Image (cartoon, rainbow, N blue to C red; front, side, top):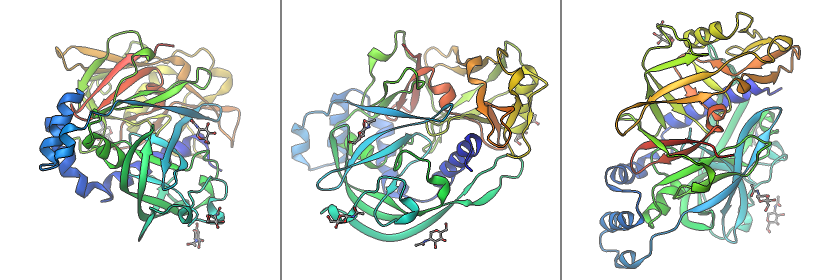
Length: 410
Ligand SMILES: *[C@@H]1O[C@H](CO)[C@@H](O)[C@H](O)[C@H]1NC(C)=O
Ligand SMILES: *[C@@H]1O[C@H](CO)[C@@H](O)[C@H](O)[C@H]1NC(C)=O
Ligand SMILES: *[C@@H]1O[C@H](CO)[C@@H](O)[C@H](O)[C@H]1NC(C)=O
Ligand SMILES: *[C@@H]1O[C@H](CO)[C@@H](O)[C@H](O)[C@H]1NC(C)=O
């Protein structure tokens, strides 16, 4: 059975596999680096840059900059908010494909009719119905790890086979043209519960549809409004910021040099319920991942945080990396996690907070008297997922290699 924690951890490892896999990175890298160095977020400057990038394309000079587009998102909720996903269009004529917009990965992949029975629970993109579909023929198998901890478990219950292809893609009504993508042609049953058909990577180097739209004049940033299920109206804004979704100034922080596609920021300290330790008060680099629901820290940091919250929080043996506490003891337990970052201007510290309400992720399936807690241990990876992101409007600025935050305005 897939549980919340295996979901979270398998996704996270999957992201990393994809990050390190030489997928679509090569050709777009040069473009992305150029964009990162030169593109400002104003449409005017973007047009100038696209002129510089595409020397000799006279029509581009006259083309108006593209305006931002809002993409509504649905919440995949199983007792807790797990993933947010929305529609893109693929093929000619266009077919709707639902994808998670995942800042922790870089490529586009979705279930197609090349996958038969193993993908029967999901809506499949019909490759025979698209006149623009090109089969690339190269297959790659990705093995997912389902456990986390000191010895991450590679569990063959989570295997995905993807096949290279090209087709036209549009997002939020903006057509990005023909691009490289992957179709999912086989998968194990662990994926059956996904209410979406694929993943659209949104890494900090523009790739795929985003690179193409930026080249056409779309500002090189996106905004995310992830909300709890009860609030709804979650939204991705590509090429802009939806100022209706928050009511204070955005605070920006720069990605460290060499972030290489990751959305990550350096943090000098963490406090829990206002307390810290030498370990928590040390510098670390933390990834922001819209495709992961929980938060992940090294075992030592995880246990330092839990030690402040409650001695009753213990590792949950059946799922390495997951922790839990008797459900009878979790209600009202203070667990405010403050993570400090450094603002771009003028270098002041600012804090992002995960409120106590996020501590309880829900009962474990294998022992419903124990409630899973928010932090998963994962040595070598520190990552904040949706349990933080759904409390802030977040701006993911590729051109300026920075992230912006303001408390969500709901
Ligand atoms: C995606 O498209 C489907 C089918 O057209 C529609 O039912 C669904 O509401 C759309 N989802 C979102 C989040 O817009
Ligand atoms: C895909 O489209 C083709 C051509 O329209 C059709 O014959 C076939 O039944 C479709 N396949 C599925 C699985 O819907
Ligand atoms: C799909 O994957 C399963 C293992 O999960 C394997 O048994 C099966 O042979 C694969 N099917 C194809 C068509 O490759
Ligand atoms: C905490 O764990 C991480 C990952 O295993 C390790 O790199 C780091 O040195 C540890 N820190 C301390 C203070 O032990």
